[in-house]
Every structure is written in structure tokens, then in C-alpha cells.
Image 1 (cartoon, one colour):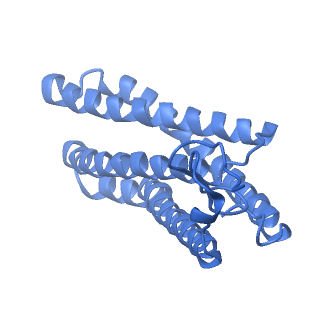
Image 2: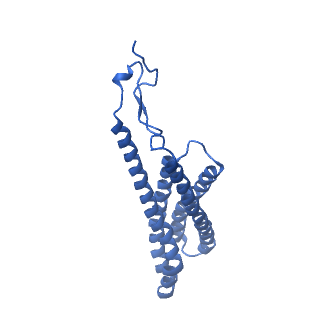
Image 3: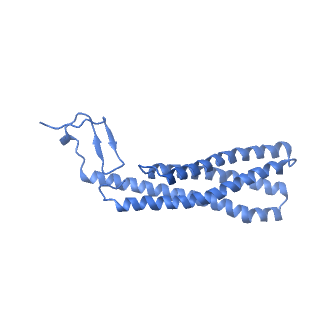
Length: 207
């Protein structure tokens, strides 16, 4: 008598030891997956994971490094060489683009964590997610604040502007410090995930 598998219809377990078909009421002989298919799925998943990680590092470097260099070097030169309104206009355009790059970079970090998520969440994982959530909320607030400040300049000029602008700068500085912690936490997270993957047998390691 042919043994049947009572499993979910037409679904596959892609994360785990192998590519195991879950097809309801079909003989196991008809749903066998060739050995090369499991290896191919693991290879594709690994390549996608590394590609996302590469995009994340690239985007984060442009965003974090760009803001750091612009605030530490370029901004000082602009205000030394140009009047306040001209320098401020240039800064407004640059920071808007940098904030958009930051939003994309944060999205890539969320995607990376979704791919690399361990089956058992540790306190460190929850802390990493909380830190990323904090940075994400600040980034959304900075995008809104940037638009608000731009509207203020267009409607009211510099009258009372710097008081509100100081709040924006302080919030951005808090995020900058949180991003340093996030970079260190991501490196530690990747190291632990890669160690777990290397220590597991090839037929049991997560793809």
C-alpha cells in the first residue's frame, strides 16, 4: 500500500533542512524532489541574502557617511563662503535626498532582518528590532520635519526658524548616535547567524 502525506496543499518549506514538498494526498513517489533542487534553493537564498546585505551596506554608507561628512565639513564651508539663505537652500536640497536614501537603507535593514531572522528570538534580537524601530520612527519624523522647515522658510523667512531648526538638529543627532549602535549590533548579528550556519551540517543549515 502506497503511503501518503497529509500536508498542506501545494506549499513548500524553503527555510530549513531541505525543500520538502507539502502536497496533500499524493503518493510520496510522485512528489520526490531531486537532490540538486535542495542545493539550488539554498544557493539562490544565500546569493539573495548576500545581495541584500551588500545593498544595505552600500545604502547605509552613503546615508550615514554622507550626513557625517556634510555636517562636519561641507556645511562649515558653505556658511563661510555663502550667505545664510543660499547655504540653507543648498542644505535643504541635499538633506532631502539624504533622508530619502536613509529611508531606503532602513527598509533594506528590515528586509535583511526578515531574511536572517532566527527561529528562536533572543533578547538581543528583540533589542535590535527595538533599536531599528526607534531609528525608523525618527527617520519618518525627520522627513516630516524637513518638509515643515522648508514650508516655514518659504512662508515666514528666518523669523523664529532657528528655534525650530535646533529641535530638528538635536533629533538628527540622537538618530546619528543610535545608528552607530545599530551598525555594531548588525555586525554582531551577522557574525552569530553566520557562525550558526557554518556549524550546522549542510543538510540542516538554514538556506
